[in-house]
Length: 127
Image (tube, rainbow, N blue to C red):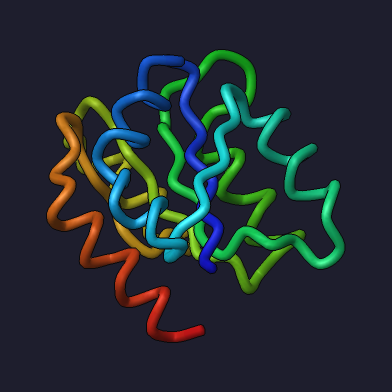
């Protein structure tokens, strides 16, 4: 089972992801975890040794710790975890910063769930 962590300050994102990945969760391929801030995400990752999460999917624009700051922290504390970023804006500056900081992928809202599903499939097949 592959555990992915979705980090977004908008709580309705949880329902959206649960709907979009219902089949994968039901069949036992995926386990979804949710955090609604960067701090909450780090606490969740710190609570398991080693973390069960293999993929973090984080919004960039969040109050408190931004997604880019979270990316830096995850990459320094948990280098084996893949991190992809999402932004409501396809701005090149955030894209560049995310990729330079080690992001695996960069998505813009609304999320293209077919692309995300392919990305998660690649990660599942690497395990």
